[in-house]
Each structure stands twice: as C-alpha cells, then as structure tokens.
Image 1 (cartoon, rainbow, N blue to C red):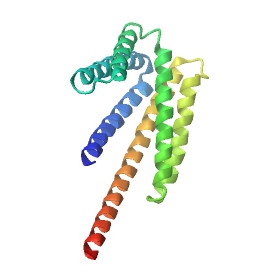
Image 2 (tube, rainbow, N blue to C red; image 1 turned 60 degrees about the horizontal axis):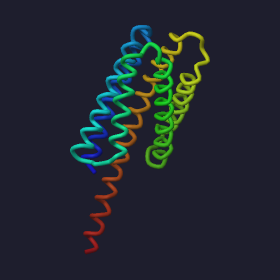
Image 3 (spheres, one colour; image 1 turned 90 degrees about the horizontal axis):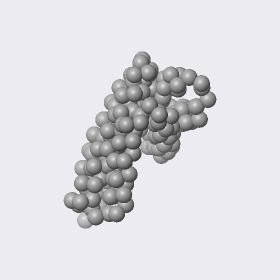
Image 4 (cartoon, rainbow, N blue to C red; image 1 turned 120 degrees about the horizontal axis):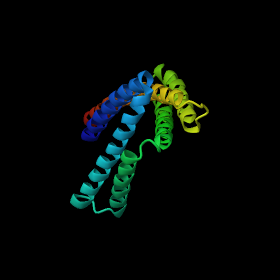
Amino acid sequence: MKKLFYKAKNLSIITIIASIVIGLFLLINPESTIKYVSLFFGVTLIILGVGALVSYFTKMKSVFLSILGTLAIIAGIVVCVKYKSIITVILFMCGLFIIVSGVTDLFTALKAKRHVSGIWIFSVVMSVITIVLGMIVIFNPFDSMLTLTRILGFGLILYAVMDLIAFIEVHKLVKINQREQIDSDGFETDDD
C-alpha cells in the first residue's frame, strides 16, 4: 500500500508541475506553445504506447494492453505529423481531461468532507470552476483559437491547483487512516 501511495504521490507531483508549466506557456505565448504542446502530446502518446507494448511482451499478456499500445503509437504518430490540422482535437482532449480531473477532485473533496474540515468547500468550488472551464474548451464558443488556448492554459493551472489540494487531502486521509489503524491495533493488543 505504501509503495502504491508513493508512486501515486510522485506521479501527482509531476502532473502538477507539468500542468502549471504548460498552463503558463499557454497563457503567455499561445501561438507557439500550442504547436509544441501538440508535438509533446504526440510524443507522449507514442511513449505510452511503447510502454504498453513492452508491458505486454514482458509482464502482462493482455490483448487489450497490446491493442491500446498499438492505438496509442498510431495516434501519437498522426498527432506529430498532422498536428496543425488536429489542434482542435487536441484542445477537445485537453478539455475532456480538465473535466474528468475536475469531477475526480469534486468527488475527492466531497469524500474528504467527513475527515478534513474547512478546505473541502474551497475544493468543491474550484472543482466546479474547473469542470466549467473544461466544458468551455470542449464546446469552443469563441471564434479565436488564441482565446481558447489561453482559457486552456488557465484551466491547466487551475487543474494543477486542484490536484495539489486533492493531493494534500489524500495525504491527510492516509495519515488519519494510519492513526486509526495504529489505535485499533493498540486496542486489540491491550485486550489480548
């Protein structure tokens, strides 16, 4: 359990930092940043696809994993080669990512309501704002791609803040759970 928590912790920290950096670049220089983000997204898909295929051949013999890896590699190559014509798709996927993250953070905040007082209300409000921003990015009510890109940048920064809050709340929940486990173990030992 501890190993899983530390892996999730490291991944969460990397995601938070990457979201803040990309979000700032999208706000400051949206034109060139969206090009580089598109290429980065394509390369990331390729790397994830290769990782899935390596896992398929070395550890897990899951057909689903091999199909997923192959599709990720193909999608990554298409994104890298045709990134200009599929920026809208990338923005849609980023908007979807923001919505899913907002919904996840909303459930985390509502779950933390029982154990962590005060901060959960702020988390709920920020989660709802994140979900709305994701919807704006997906449905693109603006004519200007630069405006949409800047909104995406703001959404990524907001996502990073929400993820950081969720990370802190999960960390508190783990500590509370550990304390309760120690207390219950100690109680059982006293009875024996």
